[in-house]
Length: 95
Image 1 (cartoon, rainbow, N blue to C red):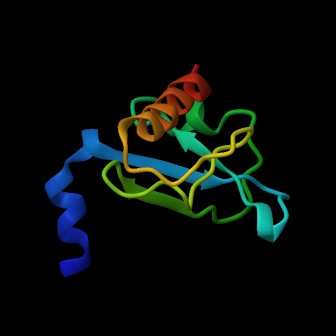
Image 2: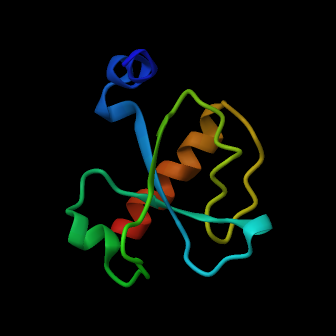
């Protein structure tokens, strides 16, 4: 219960959602940034989804090093450029 307080405090507008890209080497995982404003159908269109996909919910204030986006080498940074890249990828993938 206490581990979820930071997510509740942040609010939906300050959360990012990632889904792992299928068929990537374990030592080179990549993620899709999902658009929270699009429907789940639109978000997952043309993506490989296996039985029970795991969605990673991350606060924008957290380090995004653990969630490198597909086609990008993301460096650990809590600065706004890393967050902006994730948001831009989410909106571009939702289009």
